[in-house]
Image 1 (cartoon, rainbow over the protein chains, first blue to last red):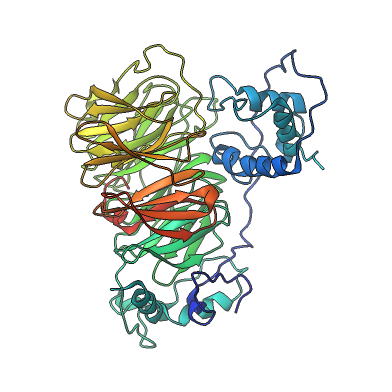
Image 2 (cartoon, chains in turn brown, orange; image 1 turned 90 degrees about the vertical axis):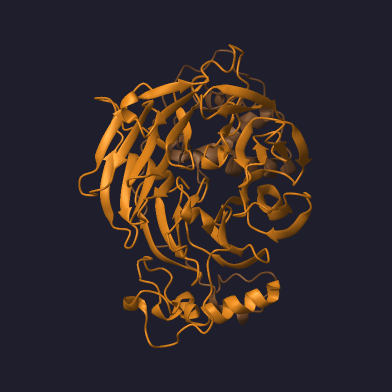
Length: 136
Length: 425
């Protein structure tokens, strides 16, 4: 029985044997999409105070939010969609305050809405650092 | 027939042959032809072998798939007993994945976010072909004659067309709309009568009609300046009207495919009445299921309303206040009810509108992050995916009672095989 075989709904291992589990692991990744983020100036009134710490529980919720809700437009792997790709290499040159500002305030004229209704400033910055791989 | 008997039937049909496939080297590219031993006896003669004919053929009319975006897998379901039959894995990034079906209702073509195009054999429960056809994709369509599958791509922007049998590329239509600009992201790709595909350019603000009668020479007709940022589109179930929703301005763009020479015209211009739109936390969707009788029900952008459009005059005949930003607005197949789900923060509920009185007559609260709804072909039941509860529920559309609940890994899109026989789905 292949290790990845999924059995559910109380099926026994024997009867579920027809379930073909296919990994497709060797499929070649296509050439990386170049980042196309244009860079409006970072607003002057970016918060400079140290952000309040984000609890461990909240961090889990934020990771879920990033994957699933941000992922709806930016891709579950953040490889891009209607929104631009946000993987490490694409955000490496985007400072945390710029990313946090964009997350919280959106980008007028695009499909990126302001998320400040759901996130505190500290959480916006936590997400920005998460994108850059800077969270512990 | 009870569900248990169904399962046994399915097992008898599919049987052990697929086990061999499951134990084979799964790291190989998924280009192998279907296991002939798993085919039904009525399949084309070239595909049948004398060995192990299926003792119990099974129809596919009550089958469907659910996209599990958490694990890049599909749940194979059946709607007679409302059960899951199995899981098919290895489909890549399935955020915003969608599916169309072959004309025999046996194969599903899955369009993944990562550009993967997979052909899934519902009877064998396995992927039989898979190609990475682009870097980033948003959906697709199957041609009227069932021979071509088209994919709408964001990267590179455009439409690519594939042989439905082999998944070999037969045409490439880059969405180059202006000299010096990158190709536009493409949205709202649908099939239309005459083996045409119709789609919109998000960046370019255009509607293109591609005639694939001769796949080697696609004939493309461009309609320019149709409005800012078309986000999704529908074709009416009769295949005549193509309607593009606009994100960048209040209104929709309409193309009469019987009279393309008349060009694209604006429908419901300025429906926002100059008011500041509310933020849109999830992009709404349009498909042919928005049509009920002679009316089209569509989400308003940036407003907590469903807009009602008369299909004879293409004017607004009503707007229905709802709980939030509508995402899917879907008519029950008999046209009597309209079911609506919502973007954050109202994505834990579903509202039901009576198509005659235009009143909200019921509200369900299935749980956190209701992503998609799919009516069974005759509308007596509806499937609802509840992403953050890792569950798909089935409701009776008359009593609103929950009839079944099936575990699924971050479920999103639900696609039943009756789409195979409907224009634009």
